[in-house]
Image (cartoon, rainbow, N blue to C red; front, side):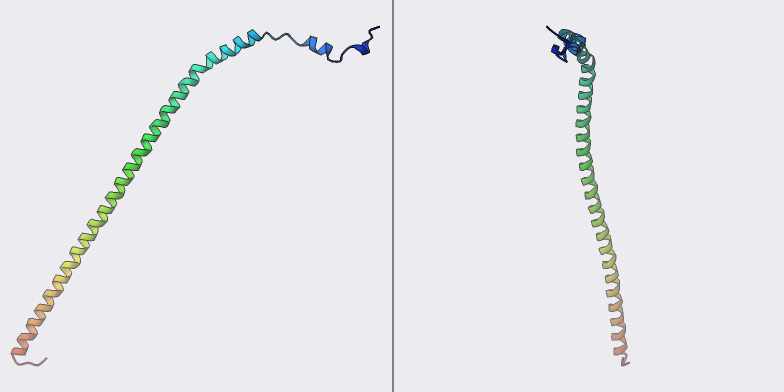
Length: 115
């Protein structure tokens, strides 16, 4: 006869599991997706916009930095020119002083004073 030893050990367990209605699972999943999807899509488009704005901002910053570098080099050139003018005027002054000294010594020599 059929005794307890002949029963499969899994038999009772399978019967205890509730029957899963696949249609219900599908509808629940669709419900969840339709609930969260619009928010996710809005977030996605907002993130894309943010990323595009960041790219534009980075490009603008790079342009401004290059302008700033150009301005810096112009300032350096201006400083160099003003320094050159300064040294040129010093040289002119020194030349004038040498010429004056030369004239004085020439006059002294004409006067008969040996230097």
